[in-house]
Length: 165
Image 1 (cartoon, rainbow, N blue to C red):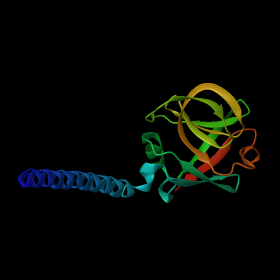
Image 2 (cartoon, rainbow, N blue to C red):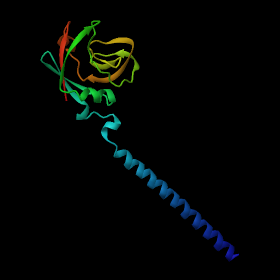
Image 3 (cartoon, rainbow, N blue to C red):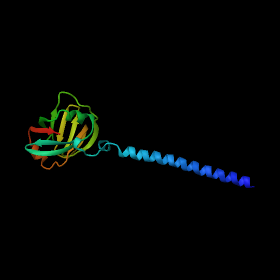
Image 4 (tube, helix red, strand yellow):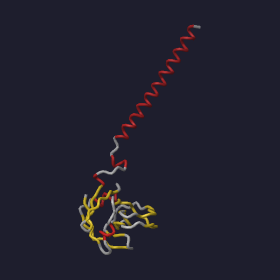
């Protein structure tokens, strides 16, 4: 009977130590995952950084915009600083047509907001200065932080817009 008791106690100890070893390994894996996540760059989490903030000068007014992190914006930023003479369209947007195309990832936007900066048909950079619903597809480039006075700054005809990092 004593031998049976000893074997049962030994089995219980082995079982408990095995479970704690497994939970220790699982705990180490979870700790590693937490550490790995906390080491991700801020850009990967969609955080606003200096790398994706730009300045636009329009009619002697300066605006700050936050750009998306995508291939189109990286190609656009490679051209900075630049000044574009943008054309008027539809009483709600200014656009500039580039000779070369940009990598597009068009999506149904649905609602345009004043200050949106979009890519249309891979060649047109567009700055919107009014809110309105849209059925067109665009690639998001960014958004002007505070578009107050943007429509007045852009005016009714062509507009000269300077972009810089």
